[in-house]
Amino acid sequence: MRIRIVSAIVYRRPEGVSREELERRRREYFEKRKKLFKVCPGTEIDSIGIERGPSSIESRYDEILAIPEIVKRVKEAEEEGVDACVINCFGDPGVRASREVVKIPVVGPCEASLLVAASLCNKFSVITVLKSVIGMIEENAKIYGISEKLASVRAVDIPVLELHSDPERTAKALAVEGRKALEEDGAELLVLGCTGMTGMAERLSKELGVYVIDPLPTAVKFAETLVALGLSHSKLAFPKPPEKERYL
Image (tube, rainbow, N blue to C red; front, side, top):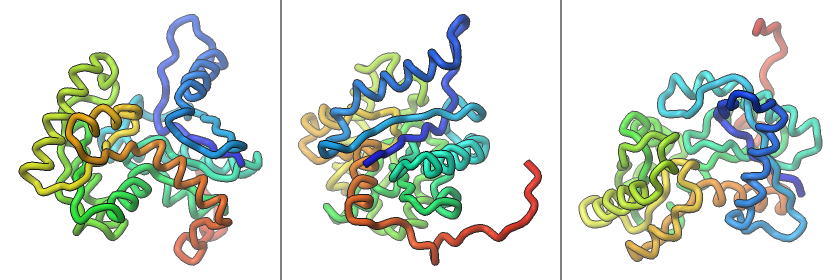
């Protein structure tokens, strides 16, 4: 089984580093993090970036810029024989559009994580990056039909690209907002609201004493399960777009 993680952002290429070398470094990064995905033996995971789009997604405008390239990468993955794609962004940009043009499962970390969270508790909260994305996450919860179980969406006020510049600061901010979600909002479980927070769930869970869902590993496992069960999105829900000229 092959699962491809499609990045929703453009990685800035340092001066003197070729595009091929940058891609190699990014693939190497995901190889080192594979243990977080907890996939079954025989499941292969690779990743690919986009060439045009934002450096991070923190607004609807950023999403729109990224979607054409994301859909392109998903189509290429299916043509290459990949069994499922996971979009590497909690906003799930391009997920629904991609499902219209391919038959393989296309999984978004937000949808997968919220569905899992809704099955494990009465109320859950999402801890995300900036206040600018709170409304976007709330909208997705409505689309996915589980907004009634969403206790709150809180932000740590740290941009995506700064999450790893000071890991201790990020960890403390997650703990502060997570505790507020539990004590003030009535949450019984937490979801990390950015795939840039991958790997931060375990510490937060131990500190607060509740389950914390890590969205990217959850989405990968969700995709693996769909493939194993022989399932994909309904083409009645996501029909193939009508044939017509499109000037891009």
